[in-house]
Image (cartoon, rainbow, N blue to C red; front, side, top):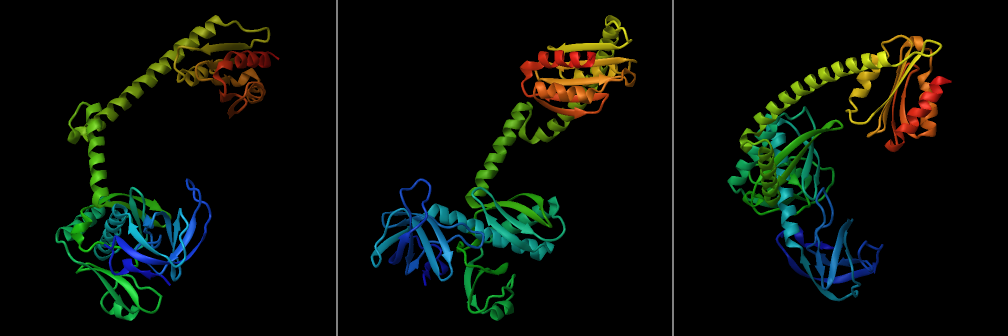
Length: 402
């Protein structure tokens, strides 16, 4: 049984311990070997309850992982330690304190969502950059997310004490524990004075002011629940700074101040829609004019069929569909169009032409690999190798002629 020193003192960074067990472990990437070490006591937190494990050192050995295995804490290290020897352990403090900020912030944020908005937390994950909680209930709208962030930060500014409490499930229930657990015996709970009491084995700060700041990011649907992204402390400051720099760069691209970016984006969107509408109209006019010219310049065959082949090079690929559609409006006309730069092709015909363009496309893409489909009167595809566009077009012409 490992004595968990972090239970009573999350700020303990250095400790002495005796090696109880050391056995070879599965290899860890980037190391020559790995060992599983059990100590009589440890201040290193194992991966548990949504909080990642600590890192640090045991003597000269680097701690690669820390696991919770029932009554024991197993440390994965990169050097073998002698059973019975005394070792000095130390905790990677910046990593630990970051986790303490995130975890205590999560307790407070979850309490606010539940008490003020009736949204209980069903899971928590502490990631490398962002943390998430999954809330159960109706979708938390923007005003709910903002309200929860504002209320949680108000508790931070009051710098309330964060205490460790012990008691049976019944004793904790009597003093208002937020989430009841089925496990019996003496439980450890974290109390944020006047705000939350929650069973938890994790590491936490001493007062809410040490959380620093809580920043709620966004909310997305996650099966039947709602996943809220957030960050606390140094992470929140870093993300807020990055957000502003991104907004500043957007403003520079739009030639406006950061606070004017939203209006500038809306204006650009309106102008873009007007441009595309104008472009589509111009493309349609071009297609109609080109189709009329091509019809006049292409003679019909002995059977009255007119086959029009065209390899587009300089034109936009957007012209393919409009031009093929216009050409296929003419009786007994087959249009075989290929856009050489992209390898896109469109085959279309008037129903009176009597060809099966789906069969033609199948044979073309068998010889010149590509993907596409359609029906007997209209098909579209894209060649895997755009440089074989001429070959595909010539093959299509031969197949239609047959």
